Length: 336
Ligand code: G6P
Picture (cartoon, rainbow, N blue to C red):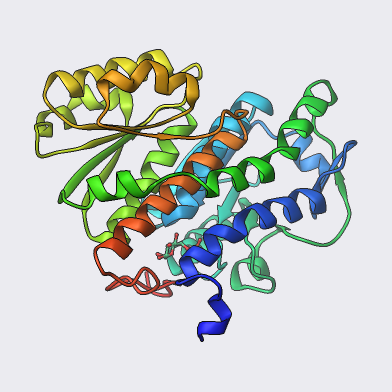
């Protein structure tokens, strides 16, 4: 009903705005200044050297971003698999192999089938969901979810720094909500194809941004790793194809700048998502800039994803489409 989404015009906008609160609650629930608490066995994580993350849609993109964090902070090698492809990898699985299945609903058929496949071969299975008592949780060895209190302590040396960074995440997410997105939405909506590119954790953001714009506004968007532009997609670039560069001023910036220059030299229109420092360096190369708050490495993909969600939402609304009911899509896909 209308009251449920009030004061927002759509549930999607309401849910975008709920994210800072959800982040705050989640962090408060699991993390204190001394330890991270999960409903899991600390020993499992202590001996963990590699992990395979499996998911569909946005959950897969979330896994892709988590890969950068787990590898750099926890020194765990992360493989990724799209749930519907998982069984075709035909990897040998033993109980030493740990799998993290990410699914917001815990009910996606492809993800459930992959989970069962891993489980049948005695893999150790963890599920990460946000709906209590779902199908995935029932068949997993471990569920990372709210409740229970076994402790899993991460490396103390970097803990304080990480803790402080996480503490700012909700605040940074709130700041992202007030991003001025209208001018860019007005630009993009006139095109019927768009490339979105990013590097590092922003590669995941680019994939997610492309997916959201595609599903809400039916513009043919592709998300690519910026470095892959020159390996094929650059052939598409001309005046009729805008390129959205997710380009924060961090360690990836110099390389992103080169990709942006490549697009600009071929008369492609560039729109950059960046921060103040990046904006100063990119102004002359871009048709428009979405300027986002400077933030830490953890908050960054969240902040940029929220801005991308707002962009997707605005484009859809401006095109007169119902952002809450994209055609042909189901919120929870229960067929493989
Ligand atoms: C559907 C939705 C996507 C979602 C995917 C995975 O396809 O349209 O938005 O990302 O399912 O959902 P899950 O609940 O497994 O995260």
